Image (cartoon, rainbow, N blue to C red; front, side, top):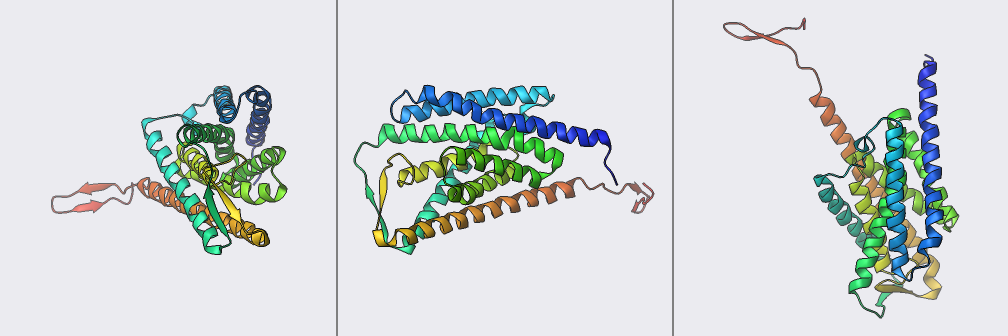
Length: 292
Protein backbone atom coordinates (compact mmCIF):
# COMPACT_ATOMS: atom_id res chain seq x y z
CA UNK A 1 0.00 0.00 0.00
CA UNK A 2 1.43 3.33 -1.10
CA UNK A 3 1.87 6.05 1.50
CA UNK A 4 -0.05 9.31 1.00
CA UNK A 5 2.01 11.96 -0.77
CA UNK A 6 1.66 14.36 2.18
CA UNK A 7 3.12 11.71 4.55
CA UNK A 8 6.15 11.16 2.31
CA UNK A 9 6.72 14.91 1.95
CA UNK A 10 6.45 15.34 5.73
CA UNK A 11 9.13 12.69 6.32
CA UNK A 12 11.47 14.30 3.81
CA UNK A 13 10.80 17.66 5.45
CA UNK A 14 11.81 16.32 8.87
CA UNK A 15 14.88 14.61 7.39
CA UNK A 16 15.90 17.85 5.69
CA UNK A 17 15.61 19.85 8.90
CA UNK A 18 17.59 17.20 10.81
CA UNK A 19 20.31 17.29 8.15
CA UNK A 20 20.46 21.08 8.39
CA UNK A 21 20.77 20.79 12.19
CA UNK A 22 23.56 18.19 11.88
CA UNK A 23 25.47 20.48 9.51
CA UNK A 24 25.04 23.51 11.78
CA UNK A 25 26.44 21.77 14.88
CA UNK A 26 29.99 21.13 13.57
CA UNK A 27 29.94 24.63 12.08
CA UNK A 28 29.47 25.94 15.63
CA UNK A 29 32.43 23.83 16.75
CA UNK A 30 34.64 25.14 13.93
CA UNK A 31 33.77 28.76 14.75
CA UNK A 32 34.36 28.30 18.50
CA UNK A 33 37.70 26.44 18.39
CA UNK A 34 39.97 29.32 17.23
CA UNK A 35 38.63 31.60 19.96
CA UNK A 36 38.87 29.05 22.78
CA UNK A 37 42.32 27.81 21.72
CA UNK A 38 43.77 31.17 22.76
CA UNK A 39 43.30 30.04 26.37
CA UNK A 40 45.88 27.87 28.08
CA UNK A 41 45.64 24.21 29.07
CA UNK A 42 42.34 22.73 30.31
CA UNK A 43 40.68 26.16 30.29
CA UNK A 44 40.59 25.90 26.50
CA UNK A 45 38.44 22.73 26.63
CA UNK A 46 36.18 24.28 29.27
CA UNK A 47 35.65 27.32 27.03
CA UNK A 48 34.97 25.15 23.98
CA UNK A 49 32.56 22.95 25.93
CA UNK A 50 30.69 25.85 27.49
CA UNK A 51 30.45 27.90 24.29
CA UNK A 52 29.38 25.03 22.03
CA UNK A 53 26.91 23.62 24.57
CA UNK A 54 25.13 26.96 24.94
CA UNK A 55 25.12 27.49 21.16
CA UNK A 56 23.82 23.94 20.50
CA UNK A 57 21.08 24.37 23.10
CA UNK A 58 20.00 27.64 21.44
CA UNK A 59 20.06 25.89 18.06
CA UNK A 60 17.88 23.12 19.51
CA UNK A 61 15.41 25.71 20.80
CA UNK A 62 15.30 27.30 17.35
CA UNK A 63 14.53 24.02 15.56
CA UNK A 64 12.05 22.90 18.22
CA UNK A 65 10.15 26.20 17.88
CA UNK A 66 10.33 25.86 14.09
CA UNK A 67 8.38 22.60 14.30
CA UNK A 68 6.05 23.75 17.07
CA UNK A 69 7.48 21.30 19.59
CA UNK A 70 8.79 21.51 23.15
CA UNK A 71 12.21 20.64 24.58
CA UNK A 72 10.58 17.67 26.32
CA UNK A 73 9.69 16.24 22.89
CA UNK A 74 13.40 15.85 22.12
CA UNK A 75 14.46 14.83 25.64
CA UNK A 76 16.30 18.09 26.34
CA UNK A 77 14.18 19.58 29.13
CA UNK A 78 16.01 19.59 32.50
CA UNK A 79 13.95 18.42 35.48
CA UNK A 80 14.70 17.52 39.10
CA UNK A 81 14.82 13.85 38.07
CA UNK A 82 17.54 14.70 35.54
CA UNK A 83 20.13 15.06 38.32
CA UNK A 84 19.51 11.54 39.56
CA UNK A 85 19.69 10.18 36.02
CA UNK A 86 22.90 12.12 35.37
CA UNK A 87 24.44 10.56 38.50
CA UNK A 88 23.30 7.10 37.35
CA UNK A 89 24.97 7.65 33.97
CA UNK A 90 28.20 8.82 35.66
CA UNK A 91 28.30 5.73 37.87
CA UNK A 92 27.75 3.38 34.92
CA UNK A 93 30.38 5.22 32.85
CA UNK A 94 33.02 4.97 35.58
CA UNK A 95 32.18 1.29 36.09
CA UNK A 96 32.68 0.71 32.35
CA UNK A 97 36.17 2.24 32.52
CA UNK A 98 37.01 0.10 35.55
CA UNK A 99 35.85 -3.13 33.86
CA UNK A 100 37.66 -2.37 30.61
CA UNK A 101 40.88 -1.50 32.46
CA UNK A 102 40.63 -4.72 34.50
CA UNK A 103 40.28 -6.76 31.29
CA UNK A 104 43.35 -5.06 29.81
CA UNK A 105 45.29 -5.79 33.01
CA UNK A 106 44.30 -9.45 32.80
CA UNK A 107 45.79 -9.51 29.30
CA UNK A 108 49.13 -8.48 30.85
CA UNK A 109 52.21 -6.60 29.60
CA UNK A 110 50.91 -3.19 30.77
CA UNK A 111 51.09 -1.26 34.03
CA UNK A 112 50.17 2.24 35.14
CA UNK A 113 52.46 4.78 36.79
CA UNK A 114 51.47 8.00 38.55
CA UNK A 115 52.23 11.20 36.65
CA UNK A 116 53.69 14.17 38.54
CA UNK A 117 51.52 17.15 39.41
CA UNK A 118 48.67 18.20 41.66
CA UNK A 119 45.27 16.53 41.76
CA UNK A 120 42.63 19.04 42.87
CA UNK A 121 42.10 21.73 40.22
CA UNK A 122 43.23 19.69 37.16
CA UNK A 123 40.81 16.87 38.06
CA UNK A 124 37.90 19.27 38.65
CA UNK A 125 38.56 21.15 35.40
CA UNK A 126 38.92 17.93 33.41
CA UNK A 127 35.67 16.47 34.73
CA UNK A 128 33.82 19.75 34.12
CA UNK A 129 35.20 20.05 30.57
CA UNK A 130 34.25 16.45 29.72
CA UNK A 131 30.78 17.04 31.16
CA UNK A 132 30.34 20.13 28.97
CA UNK A 133 31.71 18.43 25.86
CA UNK A 134 29.45 15.42 26.43
CA UNK A 135 26.46 17.75 26.88
CA UNK A 136 27.25 19.41 23.55
CA UNK A 137 27.57 16.09 21.69
CA UNK A 138 24.44 14.57 23.20
CA UNK A 139 22.41 17.69 22.36
CA UNK A 140 23.88 17.71 18.85
CA UNK A 141 23.23 14.04 18.07
CA UNK A 142 20.93 12.29 20.56
CA UNK A 143 18.61 15.26 21.16
CA UNK A 144 16.68 16.83 18.29
CA UNK A 145 18.13 14.69 15.44
CA UNK A 146 17.63 11.27 17.03
CA UNK A 147 14.24 11.93 18.58
CA UNK A 148 12.74 13.62 15.51
CA UNK A 149 13.93 10.89 13.15
CA UNK A 150 12.84 8.15 15.56
CA UNK A 151 9.29 9.55 15.68
CA UNK A 152 9.17 9.89 11.90
CA UNK A 153 11.09 7.06 10.22
CA UNK A 154 11.67 4.65 13.13
CA UNK A 155 14.30 4.11 15.79
CA UNK A 156 16.84 2.04 13.82
CA UNK A 157 16.94 4.30 10.75
CA UNK A 158 17.32 7.23 13.17
CA UNK A 159 20.14 5.46 15.03
CA UNK A 160 21.96 4.62 11.79
CA UNK A 161 21.70 8.21 10.51
CA UNK A 162 22.99 9.70 13.77
CA UNK A 163 25.81 7.13 14.04
CA UNK A 164 27.01 8.02 10.51
CA UNK A 165 26.97 11.74 11.38
CA UNK A 166 28.78 11.10 14.69
CA UNK A 167 31.48 9.00 13.01
CA UNK A 168 32.03 11.57 10.25
CA UNK A 169 32.41 14.44 12.75
CA UNK A 170 35.03 12.51 14.72
CA UNK A 171 36.83 11.45 11.55
CA UNK A 172 37.01 15.09 10.43
CA UNK A 173 38.22 15.92 13.95
CA UNK A 174 41.34 13.78 13.44
CA UNK A 175 40.30 10.26 14.49
CA UNK A 176 41.56 7.36 12.36
CA UNK A 177 39.03 5.40 10.32
CA UNK A 178 39.60 2.33 12.52
CA UNK A 179 38.86 4.24 15.72
CA UNK A 180 35.94 6.10 14.16
CA UNK A 181 34.28 3.02 12.64
CA UNK A 182 34.80 0.76 15.67
CA UNK A 183 35.18 2.84 18.82
CA UNK A 184 33.14 5.93 17.94
CA UNK A 185 30.27 3.99 16.34
CA UNK A 186 30.01 1.69 19.38
CA UNK A 187 29.79 4.74 21.62
CA UNK A 188 27.20 6.38 19.36
CA UNK A 189 25.03 3.26 19.47
CA UNK A 190 25.23 3.00 23.28
CA UNK A 191 24.43 6.67 23.85
CA UNK A 192 21.58 6.51 21.35
CA UNK A 193 20.01 3.41 22.91
CA UNK A 194 20.41 4.97 26.39
CA UNK A 195 18.70 8.18 25.20
CA UNK A 196 15.75 6.26 23.72
CA UNK A 197 15.47 3.88 26.70
CA UNK A 198 15.50 6.67 29.31
CA UNK A 199 13.60 9.18 27.13
CA UNK A 200 16.10 11.93 27.86
CA UNK A 201 19.71 13.06 27.66
CA UNK A 202 20.76 13.01 31.33
CA UNK A 203 21.86 9.35 31.39
CA UNK A 204 23.80 9.43 28.08
CA UNK A 205 25.46 12.71 29.10
CA UNK A 206 26.59 11.11 32.37
CA UNK A 207 27.76 7.95 30.59
CA UNK A 208 29.64 9.90 27.93
CA UNK A 209 31.30 12.34 30.32
CA UNK A 210 32.29 9.73 32.92
CA UNK A 211 33.79 7.33 30.39
CA UNK A 212 35.87 10.07 28.75
CA UNK A 213 36.94 11.40 32.16
CA UNK A 214 37.89 7.89 33.30
CA UNK A 215 39.97 7.40 30.16
CA UNK A 216 41.73 10.69 30.88
CA UNK A 217 42.50 9.55 34.43
CA UNK A 218 44.28 6.41 33.16
CA UNK A 219 46.16 8.28 30.41
CA UNK A 220 44.11 7.22 27.38
CA UNK A 221 43.42 10.77 26.16
CA UNK A 222 45.54 13.34 24.34
CA UNK A 223 46.20 15.32 27.54
CA UNK A 224 48.23 13.72 30.31
CA UNK A 225 46.06 12.19 33.03
CA UNK A 226 46.68 11.16 36.64
CA UNK A 227 48.32 7.92 35.47
CA UNK A 228 49.91 6.82 32.25
CA UNK A 229 50.17 3.31 30.81
CA UNK A 230 53.59 1.72 30.41
CA UNK A 231 53.47 -1.01 27.77
CA UNK A 232 56.17 -3.50 26.90
CA UNK A 233 57.15 -2.45 23.38
CA UNK A 234 57.10 -5.94 21.88
CA UNK A 235 53.54 -6.45 23.14
CA UNK A 236 52.12 -3.03 22.13
CA UNK A 237 50.00 -4.37 19.26
CA UNK A 238 48.61 -7.13 21.47
CA UNK A 239 47.73 -4.69 24.27
CA UNK A 240 46.05 -2.34 21.76
CA UNK A 241 44.02 -5.24 20.35
CA UNK A 242 42.94 -6.38 23.82
CA UNK A 243 42.01 -2.76 24.62
CA UNK A 244 39.76 -2.50 21.56
CA UNK A 245 38.14 -5.91 22.11
CA UNK A 246 37.47 -5.14 25.79
CA UNK A 247 36.09 -1.71 24.81
CA UNK A 248 33.66 -3.27 22.32
CA UNK A 249 32.70 -5.98 24.83
CA UNK A 250 31.90 -3.50 27.61
CA UNK A 251 30.03 -1.11 25.31
CA UNK A 252 28.10 -3.98 23.71
CA UNK A 253 27.10 -5.39 27.10
CA UNK A 254 25.81 -2.04 28.42
CA UNK A 255 24.03 -1.35 25.10
CA UNK A 256 22.18 -4.66 25.41
CA UNK A 257 21.24 -3.79 29.00
CA UNK A 258 19.67 -0.48 27.92
CA UNK A 259 17.96 -2.20 24.96
CA UNK A 260 16.45 -4.75 27.37
CA UNK A 261 15.38 -1.92 29.70
CA UNK A 262 13.69 -0.12 26.82
CA UNK A 263 11.74 -3.18 25.68
CA UNK A 264 10.75 -4.07 29.23
CA UNK A 265 9.30 -0.57 29.73
CA UNK A 266 7.57 -0.68 26.34
CA UNK A 267 5.92 -4.03 27.16
CA UNK A 268 4.85 -2.76 30.59
CA UNK A 269 3.42 0.40 29.01
CA UNK A 270 1.54 -1.66 26.40
CA UNK A 271 0.02 -3.89 29.12
CA UNK A 272 -1.13 -0.86 31.09
CA UNK A 273 -2.86 0.55 28.01
CA UNK A 274 -4.82 -2.64 27.19
CA UNK A 275 -8.57 -1.90 27.28
CA UNK A 276 -10.35 -3.46 30.22
CA UNK A 277 -13.60 -5.35 29.54
CA UNK A 278 -16.71 -3.55 30.69
CA UNK A 279 -18.52 -5.21 33.57
CA UNK A 280 -22.06 -5.13 34.82
CA UNK A 281 -23.06 -6.24 38.24
CA UNK A 282 -25.98 -8.53 38.97
CA UNK A 283 -27.42 -9.12 42.38
CA UNK A 284 -25.38 -12.31 42.80
CA UNK A 285 -22.26 -11.90 40.62
CA UNK A 286 -20.26 -9.73 38.33
CA UNK A 287 -20.89 -10.47 34.64
CA UNK A 288 -18.41 -9.52 31.88
CA UNK A 289 -20.16 -7.62 29.09
CA UNK A 290 -18.44 -8.80 25.85
CA UNK A 291 -20.51 -6.43 23.76
CA UNK A 292 -18.60 -3.37 25.02
